[in-house]
Length: 268
Length: 273
Image (cartoon, rainbow over all chains, first blue to last red; front, side):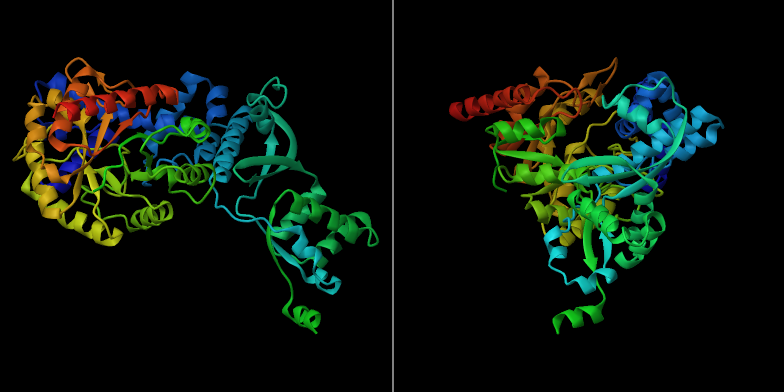
């Protein structure tokens, strides 16, 4: 058997439990060969379960060791790993859990998985520098309505419909454990990394809408207009600027741009 | 290649202890794939440890023996990481890790055939040209052997390293594991590996099954492996040597004590020579 076929056959044994490679291998007897091959077959699943447990520690604790193991083995047998690193494996775990069956607890398990995946994503997202508030303070007032901002690479938003995040917080000693996984008031969460520390907090609807605008490239002027609808035109610039100052202090903002024509006005 | 002395695998469990205690080790070996990420904690610690120690890169995903095309994206990331941390060298395993676009995340054995050599040599040459340096390839442990093999593992290593002009990372534990699993004399293995190709030595623990041994890296180095290391030191001299522990990771101090045993063993052989 040529090298290519040999590798395909061996891989089929590991992934699909298909026999065929045995004829190409040395072995004391069939039983011994089987136990040796199982070092590869079992080892593959053990390694992926360990990787998934590392990505989804609270899901594992919530499902329990046995149920987690059962779920992950089903997942592994239906989902091959295609990346050179084991790190991206399990990206669609939330959809997988949701697809199993309907119901509040299933939705909560799926949301917990989505939350843990998002935290892992933030954990090793690109490093970048936060914008220094002093850079903005130096800008001429006429430029402000044209300012647009970019968020740092680690910034993520997460919409929850269940108390999965609360369960995650409880598992990490940050709050009391809820009675059970279940529905909760819809909440938008902001998640980001400062240095190597992952941070998160919930957002009010007003702040969430403004951050959506930032993400979509709206100008500071447009953001003030949106805020005016909530607090009136007089209060709007100050309230928007206060939120912006908070985002800068939290190191959410990476950079800004402003209109070229106004840059020219400033330079005159 | 210049010896970096005695080192340890860089593991997240030990990051803080390493940086606070700055133990007396010659180098750390980082698992390449753990640091092929855009940013965050792993890279941050890697840079901080590198400020105090040389860090060599040891990968598991080169898949040099796979019949799939080389993964150029992986190679680009590897090169960038190596340049970033000024890695003294890059190593990976003489194995394949998957085919048909899939990854088994395991070090799958190759048959020791002319066909495999013909396949491997140009791939190694291509990688070395891309990286601009010679790479080290490690002998892997295996639980099965192929009927099609035409030579011994050490003959294969010798011919491969000569034809591809690559270096070898000699895992003494793997030599021992394979000697039990495939019933050969481990001394013959050591004697068959060319002296001038071995640039690094690995030591590790294993787990004995009923009829074979699994290379688990989850236990202290076994006595039989220590004995084989002494023979390896006699043959290959003072090449960079490190202990690999990937599971059941003990406190840093425990691994430093085990590393001191390797140093003592090597010093005793040098003194007697």
